[in-house]
Image (cartoon, rainbow, N blue to C red; front, side, top):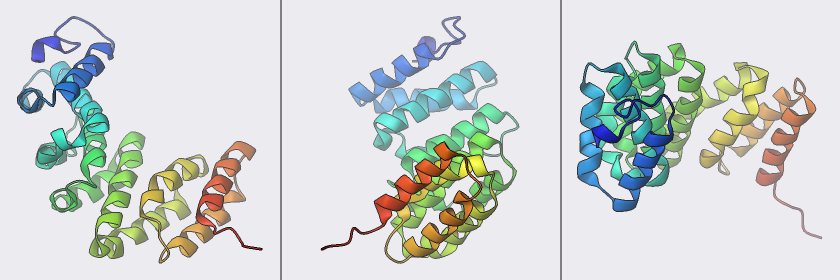
Length: 210
């Protein structure tokens, strides 16, 4: 499988990596996944970057195929290679709802990466937090305050996307505070940004019956 990666083929685009992810996903190839995971640990930065791309693309398609590698992805959060760090968070985001306890085992690293990571790392950490919140009330109590605080202080342009990522964990118990928070931020937004917020509000607001 390593020989099919973009770097191995002398390519500088992602098409071979996506094609490989599709192939592994279609076959349900657990051995292929294991080989790609092993490529994360080598010294070749290009190979490692291709491997994490393949893995989270598999996660988008067949997350169960990579669900046993939460620890491998969490290790990447501490990498000085930014590509590997945000790739690891992206991969965790694809499996957090399947193996929430396994992912939560690494919550300290996830929080640290959220606090100090790149924009893409933060984006995907929101998905991790939200899926963990949905999975267990304990995680909801621990992590939902982080999500609300994030909505209050993140850049205006990020609010719609991050609010959309949080929708998976919004329920009757937290809907009001969530809606109140995004409605307050709506005042700062452009027309297109506000439109996305209003769509979220409509999704969560029960329709009145005549």
